[in-house]
Length: 212
Image (tube, rainbow, N blue to C red; front, side, top):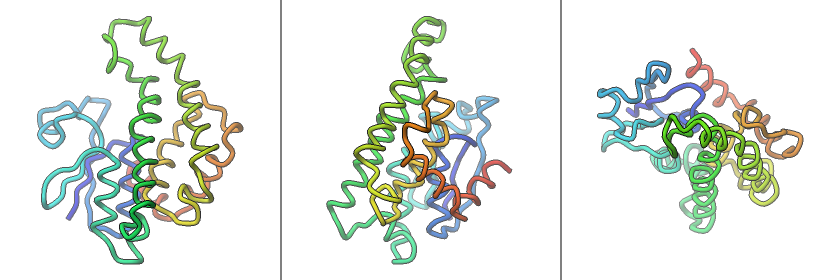
């Protein structure tokens, strides 16, 4: 059985949704950010990075959302489960999926993190630099979503007609765009995607579990 360490309102929701999509046998363990549990000795044994999420498998522990999403899809390769989410039979499409998810991981998510986690890049007492990073967030996050809107979102789903592991990942980040200062009117296709995702039973169930 798989175990997902998660915190509400974090990127862990993407993997949580995919676990539901494939019908995995899994458990969840909540980490309390308010008490800095992610930096506790117990959790650091699970994930020395002190970040969310972490996925415990029978072969070891995985971190980093792009890797976790693909692992879950590959672990449930039946046509009605994971095969459609990460199409390993199509090398180019699989590479496109990885390219999109890596953009979210290395660019959009990092830009978002500058709003509340500036201490990762400068000293925590450098208030001027942290404030400057926060002021930049609406622009940097907005430009990232504009790129997705204009160049990367191919249809009703990220890859077009085919629902993949990209979709829960984009949905999770899109939950935060208003708080990041992005005007949703400027990215109607991203907002339409977010609405379609929110209607899926698997998404509703994963969110309900995380907020319980």
